[in-house]
Image (cartoon, rainbow, N blue to C red; front, side, top):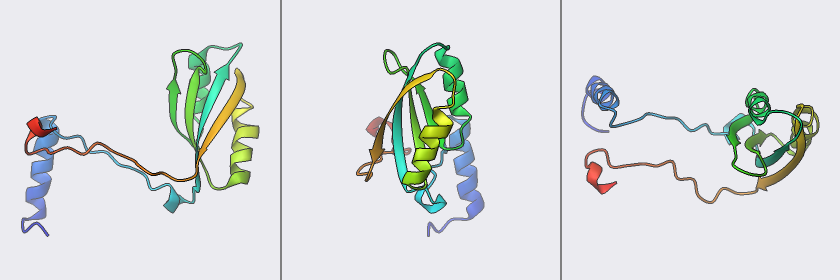
Length: 128
């Protein structure tokens, strides 16, 4: 415990946010939601505007990130799937049905060895 009132901590956090010193973000625990696989798909686009394809991909609930790339492949997405059958459904039915998706190459993470969310010493910005 910190030994200070919750209201004091909340006030300090609010001040840091207002001063644009701190940004409060969250990181979802995908495993607790039943997602056992995290995959990265490189998507080649043909016959349709890349931004339109990226917009359609971003609407998918299983997709947590969409990146428009410079060069080929044109789009990279991060997909969460509950198991291999779910991944096959997402790739074969969801992604493949989006007009303009010409090719999908996937990379599946079997273990996340490092995830660095970017913590910083807010008390001394010169140390960051």
